[in-house]
Length: 452
Image (cartoon, rainbow, N blue to C red):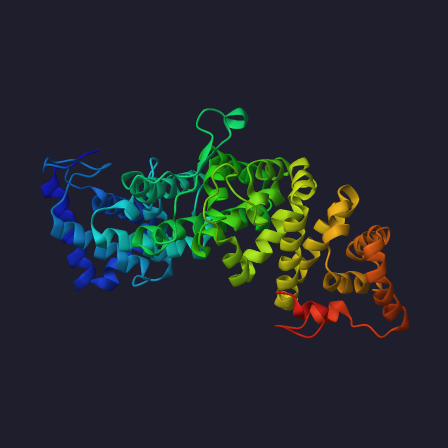
């Protein structure tokens, strides 16, 4: 398996020279021998990662001896050219397949953690291909990507906090998932702007896109199970749930991961609820004993995609016992946050109409199981779209849920008083069409326009 470094360096020099001076003939040969091309790309990626050990001693990488710095740069340049499509789309795809396993290794190290800046840049280039075509990413690579994100956070902000004597907020769930079942909530506000933070966000985007493709877009249960197992084997929930409170670059893909999981598995919805994701989304202290800084408000205000993911998570988790306990104990805060989210989804227009319906389902579940907080804290502005949904000519699950919510609210004296003129306007035909308003882009007119 191992070849003398001088021979490897000579081969890299030869390949680089052929690519530079005989490009067309090289492309023909590589396209005619696709499997060999993938193997060659795999070696080049491994050569880029093989670095001298601390102290200057040789430390051979996986299937590659340590090459001199100039030769490693040539290997990286050759790989970058392949990935840029200089040899055509077929070779580009072969290059992605051959190099993808080196993006992140089993222990989280890989191109993103390489000492050579050019190797890290190559990792970012390769990651963009994985984002564009999630089919290229295997279940094993999902597991490795999560390990890589964890490594970057642990060796970065966690170590920085420890070195500065700052305590890191933590939440332990030993009774649920074993000894290492804990979440860390380091301060990521400044770190997410660093190179390591940007790489972590990029890796998390890949994981999220792969889960979306495997769980929601491609219906092959056996393969889907492989990816679900890989996610949980990497303690994916213990990584992504704290990131819901992180700045938007990390929170948005974390929410997409959770949204995919809760849609794919009722068990996952229960786990997501139990491990605190709903508390974070509803702006409640998380962890409860030592709350960490939260950017959830900024994320939901600034990202339509994040709002849609959050609505889906809430709709799939709302009927859990944990959710109902939250609405019972923190009703005012929780209802206000839900209304705020519903308002923003309304303003998103047609693009997030399904997500607005998800929030209607959340209100419906609360009205059936914990109506007290809903009756006490539902604002008048939210009553308008609920009443208008009940007047839709086409009977759907959404209109039926809206009717059930309104009937529950009418049993409360305060809500009944607020509902009476709204219902009268509906019956007289003088009220606005909520579906028509929802299909308008931007901050269109309507009662919800005044909510922040």
